[in-house]
Length: 336
Image (cartoon, rainbow, N blue to C red):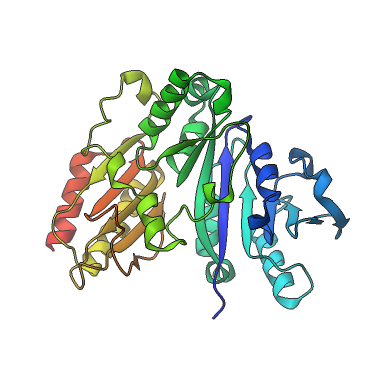
C-alpha cells in the first residue's frame, strides 16, 4: 500500500513572514517534490524558480516542486493534484504544503483532510506550523483573536524576525506565545533562515515515536488550571490550557467515549486537544489522541513511549474551558 502523503499547513497573521519562509524552504534540496498550495501567486515571490507554466493554475518550479493557487474549493484542488499525479497527467510529489491567508483559521483545512474519503485515504496531517512576528507579536495577539487562534492550534511555532528584537523582547514574545499554547516550544528564526526540519514531522500523523515526544513534550507543562505563573497581561488572548495527567491506564473504549463526548460538548470552544495515554490492553504501547474543534482523529497507537515522555498527558486548549467538568468527564468515562 502506498504511504500517505504528509500535509503541512503554514499559517500566521498578516506580515509574519510566511512568504519569506516558504521561499527559502523551497530552495532547499530536501523540499524537492513538494506540492505547494497558496492563495495567489502574487503573494509568494517564486519568480526566480519558475521554469515552465503548466496552465493558468499550475506552475512547475525549478527544484521539482509544484505550485498552484487556491482560487476555488480546497477539496477540488486537492483531488485534482492527487488524481493527476496518480494518472501521470500531472507532476508527482512527495508532500503538500499549504500556505493560508493571514486571517485564516486552520481548522477547516484539518477537517477537509479528515472528512473527504479520497483525501483521508491518500493524505495524512503532518502538522500546523504557525509563524509569529517577533516585532509585532504583543500588539497582534492583543488585538486580533485570529492570531491567538492560530497560535493555539499550532503543532510548532516559529518566531520570525527574531534578529530584529533584543533578547529580552524575544523572551517576552516566547512567554506570550507559550501562555496561549504551552504544549509546544516556540523556536526563533533569524534573518529568515530556516531548515526543512523546522516545519516537517511536527504533528501526530508522521515522524514516529521521537516526533510524538516533540509534539507533546512533558517538560513544558504546568499543573491543570495553572498558567505557569504568567502575569495577567499574558492571558489577554482569552485562550486557556488545561492539562490532565491520568495515573492509571484507561481502556480503549473509555478513551474513545471520552474524546467523543469532549468534542460533542465543547465543540467550537475546543481549539485543540492532544494527548498520549496508557491503555489497559498494553500500557507499554500508548494511545495517541488528537482533536480540532468538533472533529477528532481516530485513536492511534505507538510501538513504545517517547524517550522524553513516559507518563499519560492530555492537553486541551480553548476558550471558556471548565476544569471541573473535564475532570468529571474523565472520571466517569475511565471509571465506567
